[in-house]
Image (cartoon, rainbow, N blue to C red; front, side, top):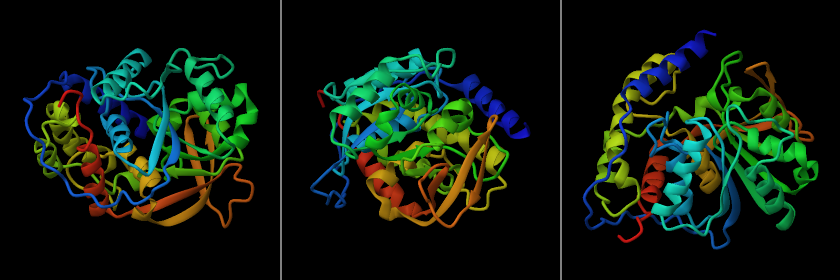
Length: 341
């Protein structure tokens, strides 16, 4: 409960100083060299997310950055976004997702509203759960990777409502969890029933936990690069990113000071790390097999020697190449231009 208290304190501190996002003056973009678009056959991905960069209630900015990363990555093809609660209430996360895709000129990608904090019954269909089911059934089996960047309510609901889609998912990439047993995190702990349901499937699962995500951070140096791309979508949110760098310079020490591999300064790009694993898995190393179970609101994990049938067994990439990640992520994020620029 001490960890939960710290998380709640962090949320209160962020909300107390959060400023509405504001735009910058337009100008010419400076190209960023990126020679890593070398996969001619993109993988299909469906992103389940709680985007909140552009809303005053937003507790974090990383979901939007992860979506922008994917939009500029030829290695993947986004078949749709399903939106959940988490970083903000569902009306706000849904609006943010629509706004982000509009700014990027990607109205061709479906955006579907899903579960909320007070409306997350797994047997109750939502636009998001129906979209997950229909899309997975319409594509060839094992064609789609589902990338979950928020609480797992939407995916668990789809699996509960149509168990047959389990065998049609190629793999799951889940951002969440803490390998220190007994601690909570926002994504997995927000809806323990949903998390336990997803972990109990036979789908190959790759979990990007706290310990991996906090090995890197976006600092003032990265924001200077954003400032060199005034025609990009992300440039419009430079003031909010600057705020998060300042706030998380303090909160990072408060919440994660005991973690030996924690990157100092800036904010942790949680979901961007998860998306990087999808786009550029070569940036990660030291993969471990682990068993994972939810007990009430906490995750318990243990090393294991094999994955067997994948039920409650996951692969965890434990190490990230921090410098290479920052270069790739920022080049892709800054590469998405605003409509009309």
